Amino acid sequence: FISVDPSRDTPEVLTEFAEMIHPRMLAYTGSEEQIRAASKAYKTYYKKQESNDEYYLVDHSTITYLVLPKYGFVEFFRADTSPEIMAETTACFVENS
Image (tube, rainbow, N blue to C red; front, side, top):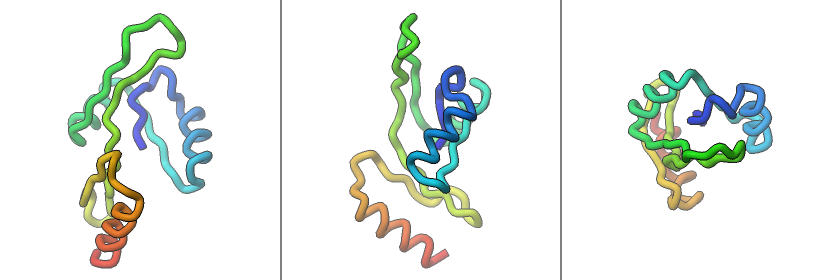
């Protein structure tokens, strides 16, 4: 995944978080400019809420993209996609690639 909050999500924080989810999960961050470019390329939304609180919120899209090494982006899944549909669709792309 790509963090949209580089000031709080350091590479160390992201690595620890990703490893809790899955040992092979990758987490990326970058400069605000790089994140803006990635967000534009993948047509996502994010916005930091105005707050002086250290626990501020960041609104953001919740889309999962299926990216295959040889082909790049091949499909996306919305947050309401069931795990079964996601697994079936992913298997179909992997088997036919």
